[in-house]
Structures are given as structure tokens and as C-alpha cells.
Image (cartoon, rainbow, N blue to C red):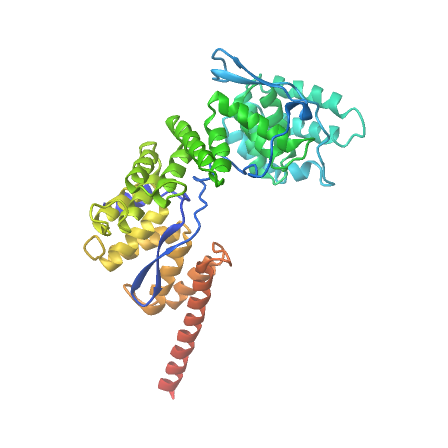
Length: 442
């Protein structure tokens, strides 16, 4: 892979945080940290806890049915028929609208650049109405029903856009009340994705409603019957935490059903289940097969994981690490913008592992990953600059990198400890250099 091509392929994406790092000297060791990528969380923001029990339908008064629906502007083949439930008062802070829209300029920019046809001014007007209604002491539901009608009219009954708008409010503010209300509107009009997110929010208690956990689970289970992939993954999570073999079997089957619908999260989970033997015997071939499907769906994640497996001898014919094959996988993933793969390529070039040693190319890939703010790349590059290994010493650049690293490392992680060690080492080296210069002057 040519370096210029690699540079052109760089995207500031984030993914699994699992790679090699320099622990000392020229030794290249592997370190694994918990992988909570945006990819692995793409479908579910939070899961209903496994101990939550679904109450009887009558306890919440929510009756759920499914009905056929012809293709329309919402591109739905089936819809979920949720009986409309009364709106409860949403908690509004003293900050009011500024809590829901903290930065008006940013809000207008995001909405203007989004796919939404609704004008930012109209969306802000709906948000203001929402805040004012929920500050009232009475007639909340009557006013919110009027607000529901205004929302549907403003969006021309496009449930997909209402759901999208709800997600935008979730991105610009930690206040989820308006997003929840918009999800409720679209969900009770039959939009499955809105129903899913609404179920997650009320089911986990992020927004409290009467019998929230029961309502959430009821919706999730009905969505599963409809074949909704994200809901199948959510229900599978609870099954896979069980010690009952039949539950685990059902959990795997739910993931397989979701994977058949090209749900990347389901493919990822199946790959990890077989890779680590979670409730099933370890089967590296099946793990590679499922992670390979992630690759086929256009994600660099699967390619990266397969490369990681091959580097550990998982799925190789003799059970030994195949660094050359792993290098090729990392190379392909790096071309798709995988920053952690670019970092691994740097280490492979620096050590000559699976490829002819090329320190210059290794440093270039390390810089690419560091420019993308990948913490381990920043720390590794700073270490090499301190030691003058594979690149000339440059204490000023090393200190700047270490200062930058503090913005992207977690104090509970090994990377933060390594940053502290490197900073101490840099302080000592600079002190020794100054003392040496003073002695020479004398």
C-alpha cells in the first residue's frame, strides 16, 4: 500500500481499541483493552437490564399489535401499532430551552446540514412549545396531544424524519426529554425504529414513565416478533447473560436472525461469541466467518478483528501466529480508514513483523494514527522521539504529544499510566541534557 494512498484514505473514525503498544525499549508487546467502539454500540444506546421482568400488559395499559402497511413516504413494509398512551409531564430544568438547545448556532448549523426538510426556526418553535407546556401545572396531556398534531404537520407525517430529529436532539444536549417525546410521537404512529429507541429510553429509566420497564420490554418483544434486528440484538443480550443453556441457544438464534438482515452488530457479537467461547465451544473458523461478514457489509471492523486473530494464531492452519496474513488484513482495514489498523501497520513496519522492516514507513504510519488522535499512537511516537529510536530526538515535539495525549486518555487505562511514565522520563532526560550542557560550558 502506497503511503500517499494511505494518507488519502485517512478518516477520523473510531473503532475497536485493541492493538499493540511499545512498553519499553524496542520491545513491541500486545495489550488489550475493553473495546467499546461506536460500531459495537451503533444500534443500542443502552440495554434494559437482564433482571428486569416484563409485567402483564394490563399493568401498563399498553396494548401492542402489528399491522401490515403498504410502502409510503416512511418506507415501511410493516408498522407497529402502539395504542396511544397519555403524555406524562417531562421534567424541565430552570434553564428551560437552553438546556435542550445549549448552542443555538450549532443547532441551526446541524439542522441545516441534515437531511431534514423542516426549517431550524420551526424545529426550535416546537422545542419552545414543548418546554412551555411541560412547565404548566395542569392540562399537560391535552396540550401535548395538540403538540403531537403540530409535530406531525410540521414534518408532513414523515415518521423517519421525526425519528431522525429526535436523534439530533440527543447529540446536541444531554437532556433527552424532547428526543423521548419525538420518539413517542413517531412510535405511536407505527414507526419501528422510533418504537425501539423509545423502548430503550423508558425501559432503562432514562426518562421515567409509569411502568417504564414493562412498557419498554413489551415493545422490544413485539418488535422482535416483527423481525426488527436491533430489538433482536437487545433481547439476545439478556439471553446471553443467562446461565441456562436454552437461553443462550435462543440468544444465539436471535443474533443469527438479526445477522441474516445484515445487522453488523449481530455479526460482530456472533464473531466474538465463537472466538471466545461464550456459551458455545470456541470455533475460530466460525468467528472469522462472522467477522468476515462485517467486512462484506463495508466496515473495516471485521478486517481489523480477523487481522488481530491471525496475529494470535486464531484460525490459522497450525495454530501459530501468521503475521504476514495479519499485516495484509490490517493493511486493507487501514485503507478503509481504520486508525487502529494504521497504528498496527506502524508497529509491524518498525519491527519487521510480517513485512520487510522499514522504520521510515513505520514512523509515517505512526504519525498518521497520531494525527487522528489515537492515544497509543501518540504515546508511542512521543516515546520514540524521547529515545531517538527510528527517528531523531525531539523533546519539544515529544512534550507537545504528551500534552495532547492527556486529552484522549482515560485515567483508569494503561495508556494514562504510560503517559505519566513517559512524561517523567522526558523530564529526567531534559534535566540530564541541561546538566550536561552546563558542565560543557564550565
